[in-house]
Length: 282
Image 1 (cartoon, rainbow, N blue to C red):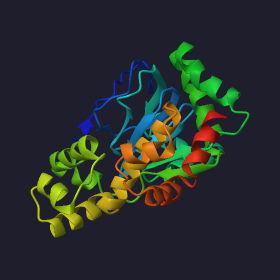
Image 2: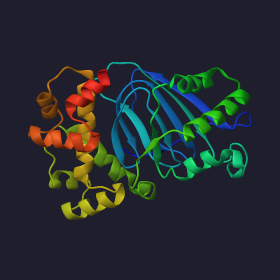
Image 3: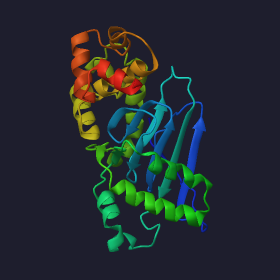
Image 4: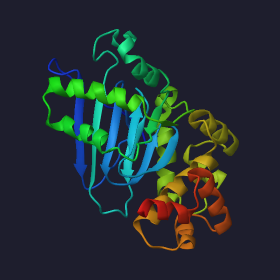
C-alpha cells in the first residue's frame, strides 16, 4: 500500500480539523499527514496499520498517531457491519507557537514528546464521560470545540497507554513505497497459504537475502514476524465474528500446525484464542 499524503482541510475559521467516518466498511488508502491525529472507533472491527505495526482493532479503540506516520483502518472483507469513527487532526501550534511550554500543559507536552509513532489508550471501566465528550465535538461551534478538545487532550494524557507502530523506518522509506505497497498487497491476498522466502522476495524483485535485510530495515522486524502478526489479526476477527472452532480458524488464516498457532496467538495477544473470544464477547 502506497502511503498517500493527505491534505488536511484548514482555514482561518478553525485551528483543528474534526471529522467523522460513517460507512459500510473501513478501507484503504494507507495515508500520512504532517498533523497529529486522535481517532476513536465507535463501531467496526478489523485490521489497523500504524507505522510498522499491524493489529486487530475493536470498537471503543482510542488511538493517537504522530505526524507523518502512515496508517489506516481496514474492515475485514467478511464483515458486513456498519463502521463509524471520530477523528481530530491538528498542528503543533494550534494554540500558538509555544503553548506546550506553558506549565498548565505539561502532561500534554510529555505525552506528545514521548509519542514516537502512536499510542493506544487504555480506557478505564467508567469511560462513558470521556467518550461522550469525544462524541460531543461534532455538535459544538469551532470555539467550544477547541476548548473541549484541549480538555480532552489533558484527560487522555493522564490515561495508561501502550506504544504502537514503534521501531520502523517507514517515513524515511516513502520514496520506495511502491515496493512496500506490492509486499503488503501480496500478504493481504495470500496470507492463507504458505508464503516462502522466494515468493515474497520475487514480489519486491529482490534476492531472498536482500529482501530479508530490506524488510527488517524498513519495518523494524522480520517478515516472518510481520506475517504472523497479520495472520493473528485475521484470526482475532474470525474468533469475534464467527462461531468457528479454533482449529478451523487456524487453518483459515494459514496455520497448518495448531500448536504453533496457539503459541503465536499467545505471544502476540497475550491470551489464548479461547480467552480472547470469551473476553471480547463478555
